Length: 101
Image (cartoon, rainbow, N blue to C red):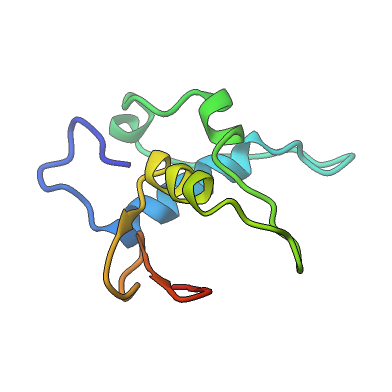
């Protein structure tokens, strides 16, 4: 997730960390606890994804689950992943037979 004010597009790892932080903020705080976000004025003024888009950006998988390959590829692409010959960097994925990198 790049911000309009970013001078240079962040790498995939930075974008993944941003999405993870925003996703955590959409989760309810533990009972009796509150959340405190410390940030800069510049950061708070930037656009962020809608909560609904973050909530729909996760996929729960389980052992022995039959995976629809096309639907899975579409889910990954919709969430910013790119297909590669071999998944080497954050944000890349690859199918190698029945193995997903």
